[in-house]
Length: 308
Image (tube, rainbow, N blue to C red; front, top):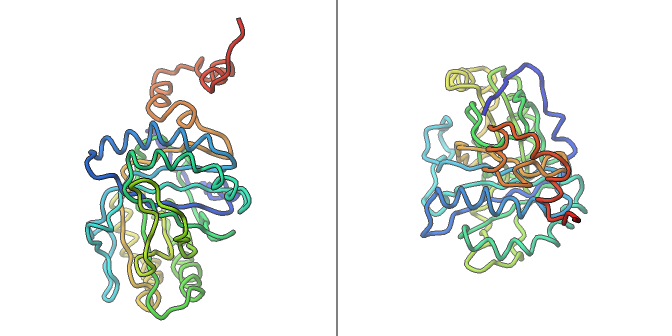
């Protein structure tokens, strides 16, 4: 995917997404990662995109956490056991909590599809103001495939004995405030999670339950233009300030490298990937088939019948 990096900051484009539903996804045993990617992207994604009230819907396809990507600090865990390694993140944002609840009420149709590719799906909610993009210098906000940047998703657990309020204050006033001062950071987005609602029923063969000790309290999306810029950041005063006193507030940081990102709803509208699947959208873009964007074809592919 052609990517333009600029000094412009596009962070404001995310602000209408006031709350998020952030779902960690484990692939079903017995299917390949390729099958998982293809089905989640080209079958499950377009179904989810048609549910009401979404402002944004992204899929992040990930590498397993293997350590070594993020600097390890004494007293902070960074590696994960196999059972905690997940394969992707679905992030949906909404303009209000009411919109999110409307989506939840319509989302039962997805339950029948979950067992085709997932073994576990753990969904976190954020409250208004607790999913925020602080900086974003990546021009493309609605990717459909690989971006030519280094992007990571950090899952964060608070330290034992620290209150949620104190942990959140550290993540916003110390960690985020310091990180975003670095010119090496292309994007920084922070989520502060509520405790999981474990009353959400399981789907057939798909667990929606997560014990309290295995839950995360925050997630970070962070990007760099290349490995050199990433290492410059880790050697910077800005990172040193972000990591200062971290062990007091953070117990674990697990880092997942992003393989690709796909967008199915953007600014409240289905993208071409949402309408036609990511693969078809890519073909239309590569060929330059502008006729496929005409209203009559869009309506036809959306299920409208053309009178003869």
